[in-house]
Picture 1 (cartoon, rainbow, N blue to C red):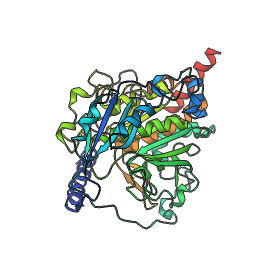
Picture 2 (cartoon, rainbow, N blue to C red):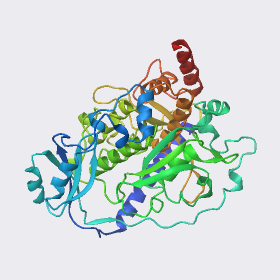
Picture 3 (cartoon, rainbow, N blue to C red):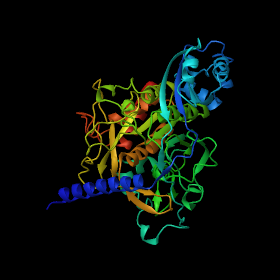
Length: 477
């Protein structure tokens, strides 16, 4: 039996194990203890009677956010204006609670006790439509268990001959170490990580030196912190931010980070697209340069929320419309392509179908870096190449919620490899726009001459992207 067959069998085993975990989780469900009800998305007619003016953007955006736009020749527009407070007060007068808002899409999320309340809201002249995006479940998965945090990495994880430690392969295959060698490590760049949980990031010693600017929970704003849930975001963050020489160095160890939770672990419903949008808008408002999102959706708990293939056009899904706007705000979104390649869906999810973003697939960590069988494929419904690029994701070396270096698989973990190095690349040429940096990385891919919908533009060469970009900058002067 050859090596490739063995690897595929191993991946199948991992996939089956994942299903077993899901079944076990389903068997340990508990009664939902929250308040029964529904969450609706209200679409507003306009932003009249807004208290803000486009001429004074620093009243609703940070100076860093405004400067990011100015540097790229972008202007603040009506989508940047907050939702009308007058309209919000009208909605609140109908005895409903506001869950959140989207200024980009001019929507308001409201929680109601019963669906009949929505009829009164639809009568308001400022409301042009509504959509049910969440309803309370009967039961939910049991909560995650507390785990002991290791005070230090295992000695066997050290590599005295290589400063990158166990992360060396995933950085050197895309020539990221060449950027680091000229002091491009993400300094001055701000990255938002939108994910589902950052277990023990506040306790694991390897994260203590990471420049974490703050955190927000858009699913449960009243939660004391983000650090008691799942560790998916912990692993994602580690691939960029950890800096422990000879054990593990991430792709952007000098960048600063915001940790944002939009993933609801109790249910899988469309409201998560609203939470994601709120997180992305927050990242914009505080001045983040890049967003890493290792999240994707296609199938929800309710069939009528679930997407169809024809809807993967970057303009249909609420979350994809939000994602497609990011480059026009001067932000690079790096999103995992998805892990549906071995299932019946097979295609990318949303928002990986968005336009003007970087969707990342996964390849195996051994030569010749074949595509990971679980990776989702393109194209989008309007025939755009997806994924855009690929990186090592089968497996990726990461730091988990116990503070242990381990291996895990998924496009979720290929994405932050690319995101961190895009921050390093942008550090070198801040005069470039988000779109220009995205195109540089695509152009550097080993498959750029003949991109396809499995590998996209291939595995990028960040040193090549740097050289091309610097040559462009020199010729423009």
